[in-house]
Image (tube, rainbow, N blue to C red; front, side, top):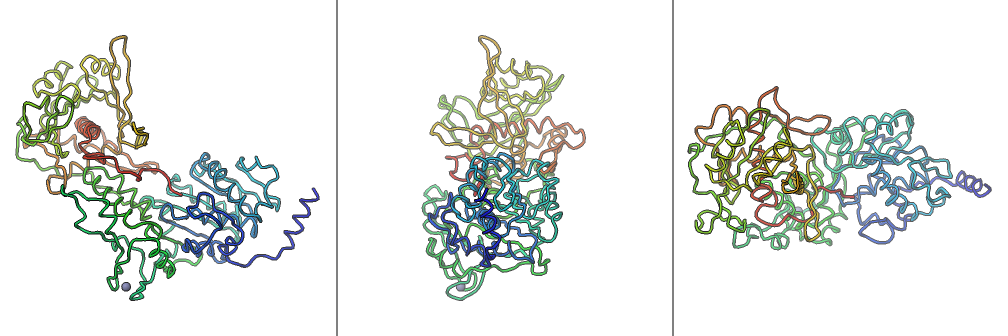
Length: 605
Ligand SMILES: [Zn+2]
């Protein structure tokens, strides 16, 4: 008790520290947990952190919005700012992560350790250390800190908060930033918000908030011509000859030839940490929106000031490769996490032109690939003696009293041609169609969304595979070599029907597969990647059903939604074709090689 009084007495008489928080942190923070740079915090290692920390304690500023790339210390602003606040400007503080679990993790694995490394904060620490694990922390100077999840709406209500620190706001539900901000307004003129995020989606809460600020961009001055300029991705260049004999990018040569070009004098800067340090020494923020209210300040930087441009070029080119094969996810991740830009989606792009491709239903196709006896893909033209089955996929949508079937031939490069579509009445009709087109049972896929048990039973009998559309965007797969990858379909699930019969079921992402379908369908030009073909005599019904859904945002999430009550069975059949083609690695980011390393949908700092 005496100790506690003593501390309060000393704290009360200590003159306030007037240094900027980053200078204070250089003296008092002995280590940043998880930092790639060991030892004391040094602002010169990441000079883009200085000004946001100064803005945080500037009495004229109400809102500090930071949008920045991952792994460039943006969360450190919150952590150092929080240490400074606890020691120098205590007041009720709310730290919000995405969910309560994320918040617990943040408190235990990052905030706790950084408090340990900061003696002025450690001195005010709750005596009982296990209380660091609870969501509410009381410090001996009377300050209370809550570390909670932004998803849980009750966390955003009632309390009156002086300091709000919101991390990764791009993942918060719509409206929750405003709710949290209202808690600070309730505190009065001293209240302040710090929002931290990577890039999200165009017009989401994070970017709309940033647009109300002066939007300061991190810049450098060219050592040759002195032109001040932002770190622009367009100015990163690599040798156009960095390709292998097969014409594909040779990534080691891409990495070796990448440089940054000054947009003033054209000087090329070598890709190394030394260059980046030299350019960052000239670093300064330049407001892009100087007419904003002085109460709202914003900061933006991308990965160019903090990581290898060659490595970025590789991530970018791999993402472009995946996009060409129909999978936009890696490109989206690159824009959001590396360039810290909002992702602009093709909102109303669902009405797609389909041009008939100059052939008729049921005609054979010379580009069609085949499978050999070991299940390997044979590219056309191939030796017919080696081919065990044509690379033809049959997909079936099962309704109450009828079935819809689509047969599509696939080429080795992911191009495909609609061979047949038909409304059928019985499972025997499906057998007849399978036989007529010589389709291997392993390449027949049936939607088990309705009449699930019937579908399982028919699949088990015939060696077909059941598919189920699903709301999840991706599914985790553990590869044989221990790596984890996210795919648009789930690992195989075995359904056992009885002692002798069972079938395989795969879930697929309705959003991502239908996005991929929309993208594949747009291309009829072989120069631009795999083509998607339909015959001259495709039925009116087929064409209509293919325009039966649109992409809409609901509750902050994108989804494909039926337009009115338009039948969408052929669309589902075609989506299942894409699912099967992704599983066969004909299209998508794993087509034609290994999964790209590194750029998964995980989190950064
Ligand atoms: Zn220059």
